[in-house]
Image (cartoon, rainbow, N blue to C red; front, side):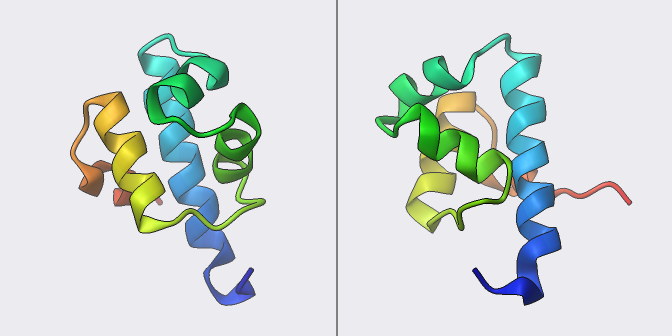
Length: 75
């Protein structure tokens, strides 16, 4: 992982966590909706793994949010 973007990956993961919980979904449920493993979803949410663009698009679609919402960071 590129340390240069680590803080950004954390923010993206927190946004995924926020929207997932807002919809009352577990990591397992989101994993099933996106065809990724629960472990992969957990790694994306905690910035332990760099998400691919495909993964971000799949997650946004499953959460029924525009992909840009994953990049809206609150300071």
